[in-house]
Length: 137
Length: 280
Ligand SMILES: [Fe+2]
Picture 1 (tube, each protein chain N blue to C red):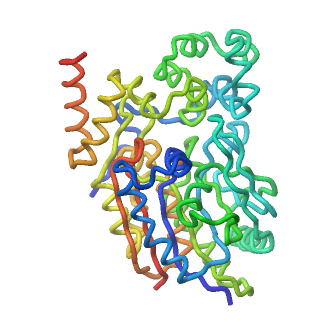
Picture 2: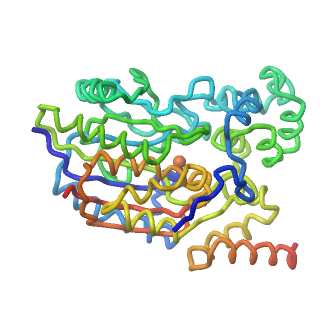
């Protein structure tokens, strides 16, 4: 089913969490890891600036967190398993996080998942999702 | 001699735990998924395992990026779940089988697998949800466990070939175990899904089909792709199929018999799958 391919050929829309990302994102991921503790989640909510400072977030990481930009956090080295704990503080689930990253409404994102269940390929379902977002914006 | 009764493979999407907690199993969204476990319940009642060897992956509960083992093996008397960051009710604890853990560890290192041993290991939804699905109405789990955590978080991940070999080495260890346990092998996670990036929501039915069709009869077919190509085909988190491949290895090198399969898109962002296999 697959021929030999260049292992480094990028995967569209995909950011592999490798050593570079792990090094770059260490502080941000460390902060998110701390959110396994309810007291730390509360401390973040009480004083976000101070909590981020305590973990020495880089300016890029701090900006992405302030903007609630998931793609920004990933670009700053965030790993989705840790970022999911930050999202949880705001009551966001993985469909919410999916909608934020794809730039469509949550309902539209969920419809894209259901369309794949109904037999569409990802590309078909994704293109329809983007089309629909343009129309209903 | 101990007997390997078979293998159980299942997705472990966190939302499944929420659905169980809220009793949503018969809701239209969830029913096609939960209906796939009736056969699992019947089979487990019939084969009556008392030990489970579980291949799963940590999602940032036990391991942080300061220390990230490629293959970690539990050797604890007890394993506990803890708050994963969402403040959800905790899952039940597990009893470990420490003697069997150390037997497997000794055998693996003898076979040149340089694993990490863990006498303390928190377990997350990847271990608990498969058990909640398999034994929904018990107050304590009917099996003791030996858990394996495979790094599916931070690249480089172990190759599919290496995961299959690890599982096969576990099978070899079980062959030399003199206890009379009835052992079930469990692989959790997957199938195709991607949570992160602009490709979030990616699912690949065709690749999942390929994996499920080959896992019992020709698991080596799943090991021909590099991890990078597996991510391309299965999604960034779909690469959790590595847990399934390791578990399949632990079932033995002979072709296995598939006795059950369920596949449903979507559960949360995931193509959810369930399989049962018996050894040849
Ligand atoms: Fe997972």
